[in-house]
Amino acid sequence: MSIQAIRNNAAQATVDIVLQDGAGRTLTHAALRAACRCADCTALRRAGGQPYVDGGIRLLAIEPVGAYGVQLIFSDRHDRGIYPWPYLEKLAATPP
Ligand SMILES: [Zn+2]
Image (cartoon, rainbow, N blue to C red; front, side, top):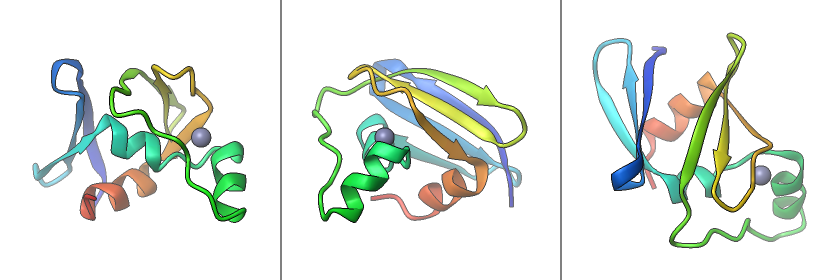
């Protein structure tokens, strides 16, 4: 199963992920930010911590990264997280 579309609902602070079969999942901006896998967030988790996610966090932009996935830019200036398509599928399949 692959992802057909990803849509930012700024007003609801959620992202819709539409799978190839048309099934849809909704993830919150906060959940996506918490799932960031950039080098900093990964190092933090290895050290036993968790990325700090403010409840008012917003996803500002979704930038394509070739055929690989997307880069998500958040309102806390966190913009280094790359979300490969398979990782987004996994997140969509197991909403928090
Ligand atoms: Zn990060």
